[in-house]
Structures are given as structure tokens and as C-alpha cells.
Picture 1 (cartoon, rainbow, N blue to C red):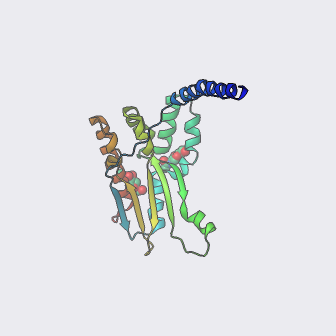
Picture 2 (spheres, rainbow, N blue to C red; picture 1 turned 90 degrees about the vertical axis):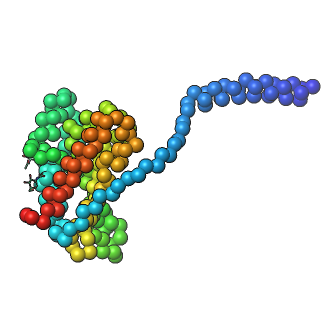
Picture 3 (cartoon, protein in one colour; picture 1 turned 135 degrees about the vertical axis):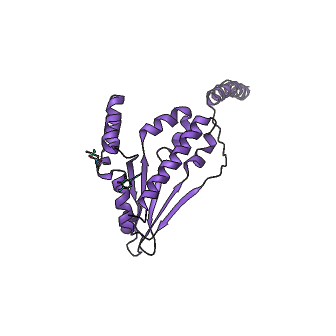
Length: 201
Ligand SMILES: *[C@@H]1O[C@H](CO)[C@@H](O)[C@H](O)[C@H]1NC(C)=O
Ligand SMILES: *[C@@H]1O[C@H](CO)[C@@H](O)[C@H](O)[C@H]1NC(C)=O
């Protein structure tokens, strides 16, 4: 009798508790989707010495002047403060440097027995451009600001590798305005690296 009561009490408890738990978990909803898209990798390969190429790039993005950019940008309190900061670094150029990841520097420590090529990843951009793109589709932020690999080649030259903007943004190109901006970025980054790898200077 007591056993039976216990059993039905347990049943009752579970019938009360279970739906409560179920309700709590169904309040949230998570969906994972995977969407393929076609990307394009842009390669520049030159026998201009790696250090020359990097030096030109550093000048073109004012690396020295960009060192405290992220800290100062995030501390800016007004749009005017932000745009003044941007133009103080960029001046008559197009982009500035957000971040640098020097793969050779850490690999040389991690594995000193291997000769690692000079290899650095720059995150380069211009918030004035990003401010035009992000509000059109905030999902584009996954690729803002973009990354560029500058890798030393076997002959001491340099290889630059990055993803073509119009392609990485293609899944978000629902409107013409966004497509126009991403096309402009293809052109502007192309001009930057055409310049940095120019054999005429
Ligand atoms: C680089 O940026 C700094 C601001 O951090 C600025 O004072 C300097 O004039 C800039 N250099 C060039 C060559 O534009
Ligand atoms: C190309 O590089 C030179 C030398 O660094 C610089 O004076 C010039 O403004 C650059 N032009 C462009 C379009 O980046």
C-alpha cells in the first residue's frame, strides 16, 4: 500500500516536474545551418624582397601610426572623435592596420628546429567603409575587418594571399548597394596590393 502510494507519488511528481523542465528548455531555440558558397583567393607573388614588400605595405597602412588605433577607437566618445582618429592615421591613403599576427615569431619559439618563412597576417580596413556595409547586413561583420597573409617565398620574395571581398560577401549580397560596396573593396584592396608589389618603383 505504502509502496503503491510512493509509486503514484513518484508518477505524479514526474508528471508535474517533466513538463516544467520541457517548458524551460523549449523557451530557447537553436538552429545550426551550413551554407556553401564559392570563394576566390587572390594571390600576388613577387620576387621583390619580402622586407621591401612589407615595408611598402606598412607605409601604405601607416603601421606605426596604427599601433594604438583599436584602443583609441573603442575609447572614442563621438563620431567626430572616431573620424578624426581615422583620418589622422589614414590621411590621403585608404586603409589602416587593425591587428598583426606574426606567425614566424611564435613558430620560431614553438619549434626552433625548423626554419620558418617570414609570415604575418594583417587585419586591414577602414571603419568609414565598414560603416556603409554593416548596417546593410550585420552578418557581413564575420569578415570585417578582413585578413591578409604576407608570406616569404623560397626565393626570398613575397606572396600575398587574401579572399576576394565580393565573393566572401556574396552570401549577403541581397541588395545592389551592398554588392556595390564590396566591389569597391575589391578595387581598393587590389590597388593597395598592386602598389605594394609594383615592379616600376
Ligand atoms: C601616421 O599616423 C599618425 C597618427 O597615429 C600620424 O601622426 C602620422 O602623421 C601618420 N603618418 C603618415 C605618414 O601619414
Ligand atoms: C603607392 O605607394 C607609394 C609609395 O609608398 C605611395 O606614395 C602612393 O600613395 C601609393 N598609392 C596608392 C594608390 O596606394
